Amino acid sequence: MGLMKFAGAAALSTVLLGCAMPMGGSWTALVDGERGLENFNLVGVANWSGTDGAIQATAGGARPAYLVSKQSYTDFTMRVEFWSSDDVNSGVFVRCANPAEITDENCYEANIFDQRPDPTYGTGAIVKVAKVSPMPKAGGKWNVYEITAKGPRLTLVLNGVKTVDVEDRKLTSGPVALQWGRGIIKFRKVDIRPI
Image (cartoon, rainbow, N blue to C red; front, top):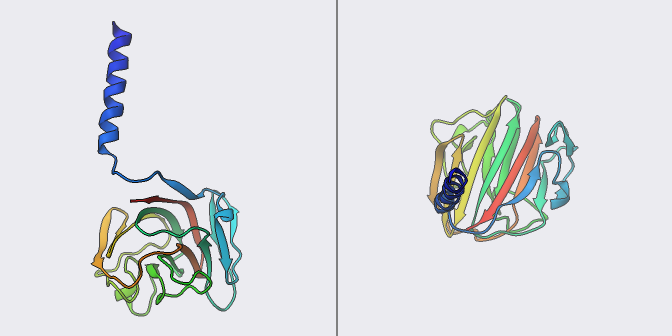
């Protein structure tokens, strides 16, 4: 009898957990610890490597460099675990229109830039689309970005706090990209799920 109660409770918890999960496709790991470089094309020059449980870059050329996903996405949720130095200039770019040339004009950039001269588009903002105030700081610790793009609605949640909820119709689909501009950036987990 005790075994049957346990099996029934396990089945019920599985059903309840399944109900709590948002509808959509399954999660795909683009970065999982030191693994995942094969999921991206390199654009620009940086010393991307799988090191110490993350994919990271610490140096590069005079211009920013990117890891650009080989696959395109339209409507999705991303979960990105990252660590950045205080002086980092980085970001997570989504719906990139031209995967060979990544900019904050032809992609939406979820910024990671605590020392940006104009902090209204610093960490927690979508550059040139949605300001953030007050700007959170990401430097020197592990952080979690949750990025959702569904139709024209874009939302950013940084460490559990919603920093952006905006509509913009400029870009509808494209690859995602991880940026190194300066400083040290580490991505330990990047998961994406179509919605």
